[in-house]
Image 1 (cartoon, rainbow, N blue to C red):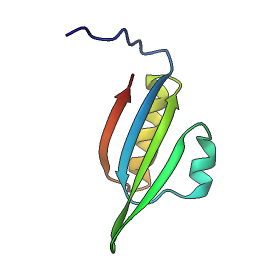
Image 2: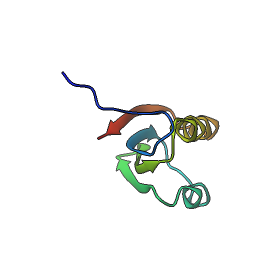
Image 3: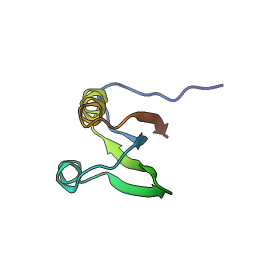
Length: 80
């Protein structure tokens, strides 16, 4: 298997899934991300963020903010 040439300082597309919903104020800060909130029949909603992340430091900051918002992380997928 050939691994892609991923660097820590270049933009990469990600799909991030969390349990819970994200406020519009937070989402406007990451305007390059596409936000999808799915209803889960009375349970916490499922939120998916898809789009480019500037670099690995920005990804860590985004994940920390989601943690602070008490949105449990379900998955982080690198889309190449």
